[in-house]
Length: 160
Image 1 (cartoon, rainbow, N blue to C red):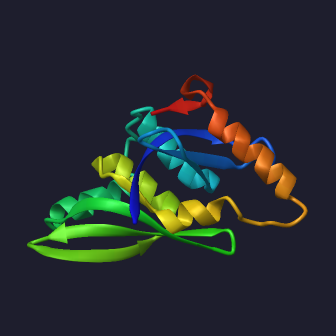
Image 2: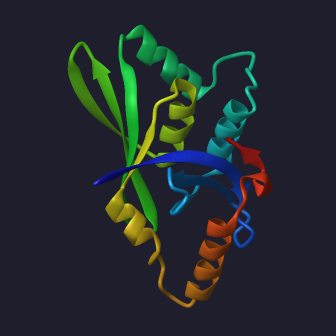
Image 3: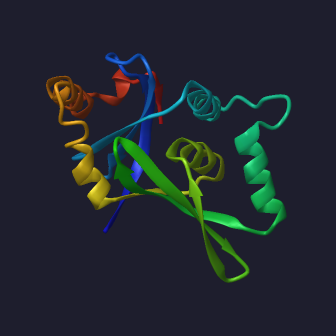
């Protein structure tokens, strides 16, 4: 089952110092943190802040290509979580045809922000994300998860 989520913010993980995109369901019951690279975080932050670069960046180029090819990004889906790596795909519609394109979640999120497409997460990903890396770091992960779930949108670096 797919669960619609919204992008609630972009922040830095206090444990790893890496950027995190926070997704939250409509009922504010579940939070899904997705660690992203600094380049993708920058692309997401630029869009959140409505900063228009002088020349199109990669995700702007992808949006422009979709428009020129007559395709629309219907939604992105975070579809799997394997060995601490999230997987996603783009669902494109063009001339009555539905196309699915493999994508990194960070790129998919940067593109969906530019096209205003919705974000969906497979419920199995939400279930698995609670048990990621059940090693000696489990206490840190549980503490981070509790902290993420308790966040107020005003605490985030970039609010959506």
